[in-house]
Amino acid sequence: MRNFVFNIRTKVHFGKNSIKKLSQELGKHGSKVMLIYGQSIKKNGVYLEVINSLEGFSITEYSGVCPNPEIETVRKALKIARSSAVDMILAVGGGSVIDCAKAVAAGYYYDDDPWDLVLSPGEIARALPVAVVLTTFGTGSEVNGNAVISNAAEMKKIGMYSAYLVPHVAVMDPAYTCSLPAKVTAAGIADGLSHGVESYFAKDEDAFVQDRIAEGVIKTYIQYGISALREPDNYAARANLMWAGAIGLSGLTTLGRTSAWSCHPIEHEISARYPLAHGEGMAILLPQWLRYIINDATGNKFAEYAGNVWHVPYDENRNKMANLAVEKMEKFFEAGKLPKRLKDVGIGAEHIEEMAEEAVKNGFLAFAYVPLNKQDVIEILKMCL
Image (cartoon, rainbow, N blue to C red; front, side):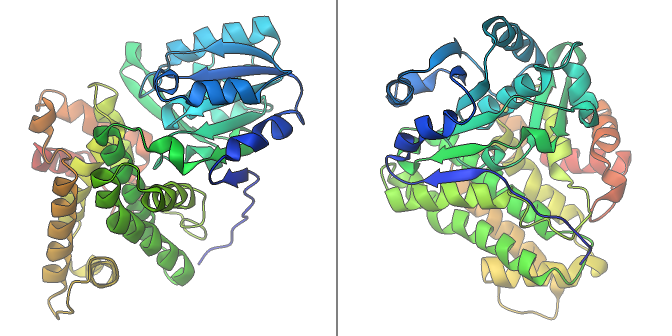
C-alpha cells in the first residue's frame, strides 16, 4: 500500500427529511444561491421542498441540465451566476447536475473559457462553494471533487478533479430516489457497481481494507439492486444503494493505489459520440473488459473477486472461476434489463478506432491494472458489439 492523504470534507445529512438541514448549512456561505437542476425535480415534488427550505435566500435558477452535461450548458449557467453575483451553487439532481454545478463553481473566478479548466483542472485556484441535494445514486459526485464534462463540438468527454470542487454539504434522502424510472435506477446500479470493480482491480497489493470496502460496495448493489427495481418504494434498498454510491467514490476504495481505471475512459469516448447513459455503457463494457484481462497474472485477484463477491466455488483453475464471475455479473445486469451489447443501443463499429485512440490518450490506460494500448481497446470494443 502506498502513502496517501485522505480528507473528505463533505458534510453529509443522510436520511428522511434531511432537507430540513439545508438552510442552516447554506447560510454559512451567504444568502445568494444559484439553484441548478434538470427537469425531473418539478415532477416528483423535490423542487418545492427545496424552494420551501430556502426561505430568506435570494435564488437564481438554471434548469434543463441533461445527462452527460455539455460545456455549452456550463457557459450559459456561468453567465447567469456572474450576473446574479451568487455566493454558492446548489445542485439538485444526480451526477450530471452535480458535475455541471462543479464546472460552474470552478469557472466563476476564471476569466477565460471554462473548458480550459476541464482540460487543465490544476489551474483551478478558487471556486464557489457547492452544495448538493441528491436525487439519484451511483455516481458518487456528491462527495468528491470529480466532474465529467462533454464537448459536443469536439466530440470529447473529459474527467476533471480539483479539491476545490468537493461539495461542502450533501443532503441525501433515499426517498427522493423512489420515483426514478426503472431505466435510471438500473443505470445507477451499473455505474455504482462499476466503481467498486474498477477500484478493486488495481496493481498495488496489500490494500486489504480497501478491497473489503470495495467488495462491500459491489455486494450492496447485488443485494439491493433488483429489490429496488421490483419495489421502487423499498426504502431500505434505496438507502443502501445511495450510501454505497457515496462510499464507492469517496476515495476509500482507492487509497494507497495508483492504477488508472480502464472502463470509464473507454465509456467516456462512447457517450461523447452517442446519446448513451453512462451506467448503460458500463454494463456493456465491464464484463468484456474483465474477460479480456483474464490471464495467469491476474488469476489470483480474479479468484478473490469471484469467491468473495459472486460466491463462485474455489477451483484450482482460476480462469474458470473468473469466467463464472463474469457470467454471474452479466446475468445480474440482464435481470436489471440493462443492455448487453453496443448494438442493443444502436451503436456500431464506425468510430471504434478513434474512440480507442482517444481513450488511451485521455485515460492513461498504459498505467491501468492491465496496461491497454489502442489495439487492446479496439478488441474490447469489438467484443462489445
